[in-house]
Length: 102
Image (tube, rainbow, N blue to C red; front, side):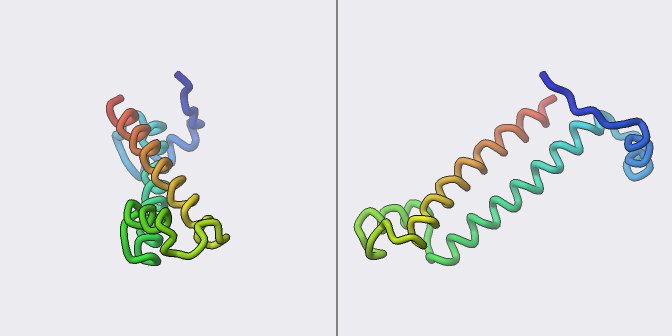
């Protein structure tokens, strides 16, 4: 497994913020992943707000042609992005869970 290396100078500065914190490198990594996860969740929420329903409902309506052409650029772009965000969220959650078990 790869390790995250933080210089001693950075560890010293961080230890002033969080005295006694163990495994600070992993904790920094997990915090960063949590921030990315929040951004991902915000984008998912933005799409749900934009269309007024969940991804599954969006997908069903898209397949039924309720948005006109499912290949129109804005709709297709949103569909692809929504798909990607769902996969991204799942992957980030898996990594965060794994890291927190360490």
